[in-house]
Structures are given as structure tokens and as C-alpha cells.
Image (cartoon, rainbow, N blue to C red):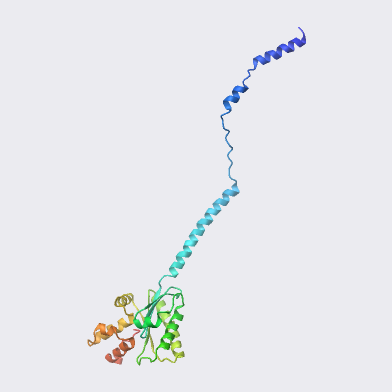
Length: 249
């Protein structure tokens, strides 16, 4: 047998031996969806996310702290009362900025109802109160007295502020040539609440109580209709000088 015939026979044998299965393999695998390779986030991006989360938490706590602090500092801290005949109550925050002003009697309302005090410093409001009072008062009462009183949970702070306000008020009265004595007085919470129920100032309440202790010639209602100066004069007439209870005791 020739060499050429042998090669031809081997080629034919190989074709018969290897099955033609490519089509079958492709048929079986055409519905298989190849999985996408999962990629891990880069380490730098993961660090940035952790930092952003931590920073956000710190920022939230800081913001809450700031809001709480200013809410606390802006809450009602002290109420200062001015009594001369018009009587007003000034509520301030811890920065001594006016939050609200209350006109305790009709005289104060008529004299100061158009006055805008909110947000102003306490000393400024008191100075302007006295200036307006002196401008619109043609004649001072013979026994006129200016009472500065205050209610505050912090007694030492109350005393400190009252002394400072008294000094400032004295200067205003001196500049206006108004010879009016000033008395300062601390108010208890009970006295403040009782006065508020009766719709009078705490100072007026104290003067009335002192008068009623030593005299039954007047009713409480009659005394409430009297001015601070009239009450002070009546009390001075009823109580001898050596036994008199001063307003700041």
C-alpha cells in the first residue's frame, strides 16, 4: 500500500472517531447568563463614607447643643418692676434684653402703649421710661417715690442688677432735675404671684399689706386705687419713723 493511501485512511478514521458535538454544546449553553464580576469599593471611598457619617453625627449634636444653649439663654430670666405711679413689669432674658413689657395700671398703658421695648437692653428701657414719664408729667407728686423691684431665682444676681439700675436711674433723675428718692426691693415668687392675681405690682401689694396691718380705716379695694406716692405717704403717717418698715427690708 502506498504512503498516500495510508494518510487518506487515517484522516477518514479521525473524522469518524471525533463526534460533531459543537452545535449541541452551543444549544445547551445559549440560555446561560454570564455573571457580572463583583467589584469591591476602593478603600479610599470606604474611608470617606465613614468620615462623612461621623462628621454628620458631630454636626447634628453640635447644632442641637447650640439651639439648646440659645434657647436656655433666651428664656425668661428676671422680671423688673418700676413703680412711681405708672407701674410696669419688664421681663428680660439672661443677656438682659427685654422679652416683654407689661403695663400694670391704666396710667402706664396710656403713657407707654406705643413704646416698643422688645429686644432693647434693660437699662435703656428704664432710662426711656423715666424720660417719658418726666416729659409727660406736669407736676410731680409731693411724696413721689420710685421703686425698683425685681424677681429672679438667683437672689445675688437680682441684688447686683438692682444696684446697677438704681445708679443709672439716679443719674437720669439728676439730669432732669427731678428730686425723687429711689428704693430697691427684692420680690419673692409668692409675692409676685399674689400681685399678679390682684393685677397690681408687688411693691403696691407690700405697701397695702403694711397699711392694713396697722389700720382698718381703709379697705384693700380703696388702697388699690391709690397711687404709690399716696400709699407711701399714708404709711408714713401711720407708722412712726423709729418703727417704720422701709421698702427695701
